[in-house]
Image 1 (tube, rainbow, N blue to C red):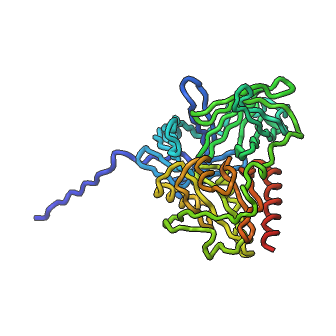
Image 2: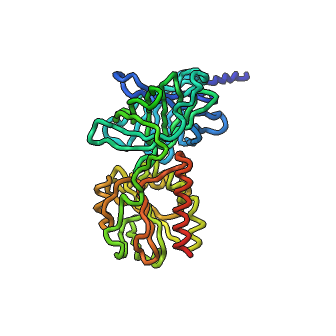
Image 3: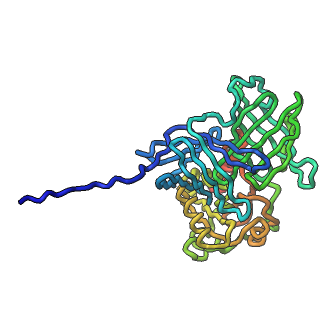
Length: 407
């Protein structure tokens, strides 16, 4: 007698959720009381082929490829910075969850929500405003009524065909990178999300100047700002903020590399070489821009005998955590020069660890040494690609200095 074999196939009770490919609009919620949101757009590629997300800020595109998709959970880490999204996929068109910034101890989580198919960063008609009032250069004052009041330069480019606007703020310690937004009636809205910082600027004008508005940085900072048109306004020279205590003294320091080997400027590979010293942190968006730039010129000037070295000041004193962050940065920008780990945090501690300088006022700070390791040039902050002409002017001057030193 033949036996009948019954084969039973068990099918899973769920199908793996897939986010729809295309453009999404995400918002980070500042607080329930404020009822304010920081919007940004991102694009999801097909998860059946290439798994990636691209965040858009004006001309900037940030590729996100550390993505985990499990059942209805979509989690992803931002490149370079120690931040991540933990979200639930609702259907295929809604994401809901948290953005977590591990560089912060307090207020390090923001509620996140995103919807598929919304191309608008701010939900106003594209033809809402045609008058390009905000276009141009502005003298900006932050926190005008406070002892912490400070100046900046607003650089805005407003479309003549629609209400879209982009730009940045240039300060004495760096720029606010790529901002994108819209103008609605007489009101200005700009935002940016780069993985480290989430920014929202709002303000209005009275026909002659930008009246007092508000600047939000995540859910932990809020201050006022206002501006008046001033094409001649300048900031303090970034070359004058930090200086060598004695230009006649030979510079030296010792820090550990990622293998915990002690590295000094007296080591054979750096001896009798002009040097570029980058004071930075992986948490710092301006440092990211500078790292990208230095990596792009490394081969040209290293072949001419110029040495490059970075000192990393993390927001943690945990060596292994700092090492992991540095490795991610080096991989992202194909960094070929050594990055040393200071194992201290903050500008005050950075200043103490580099006693040949008067102070460190910003990350990044860039030091150029001649072949005798005397200070020739110090630049505080970094005017990145979002600043346009300011960035071009910096590169030209910086590379002229390097060319003279390597002749």
